Image (cartoon, rainbow, N blue to C red; front, top):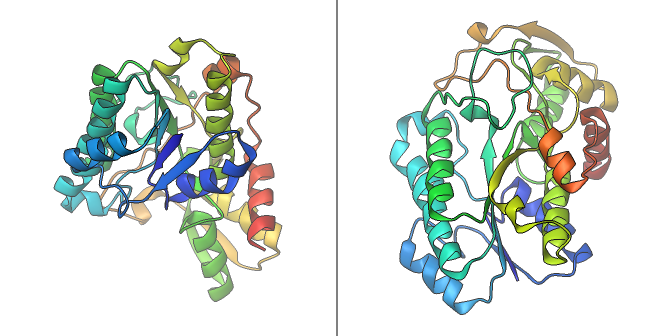
Length: 288
């Protein structure tokens, strides 16, 4: 049985959507079903369910709010992850943990490798990295997947916000000096389930659950390019103007460059990662 925490989020919802295509039983747990910040609740949940894999999608992701809400951000991103890792290590259960490109925030201009130095800026990024470091020490069978710019057919995200604002306004100002790659949550969910399927069949070595990987869609763009692509594909006549980050200040700093190198995960599992515009087109067809 695969436990998916954070089941009501974007990645968790896409895992649920795809689950019927895979030969596993699943239990999808939102925060009301399983409070991962409560250690007793986590251990009780594991005692009552025969779990064989865990995919931790639960996270405090309100990047700006976290600057004034450090305690709650740390409770989910650090303590919650730690409790899951402790329960997993007692039962030798492989853990897949979703993390973020925000852990880097370095002044380089080449795609980040998993081995590159981290330099988190802000509470969200710092708590995500701290969570990573703690669970790696606790549980060797942990696979950390850092991703970026996640959007989905489910929940609220940049794509849906652009569609709404594009229909309401004649012009939008969008940041063009933050560069990375979007991630369609369904592509990420499929990649994770394919990896677990390979693991369950013994097609990949167990050491694959003892490292960090990157996953985002192929290609590169700015938020400006992303917005332009959304409007072009939907024939929305909204004038998009490029602005720099300084013109749109936020409580938490965003990395100016966070393009992730996916070579490691592609070579380890033979994954084919779709191009970001192709995945955006698929997502827009889905919500249409």
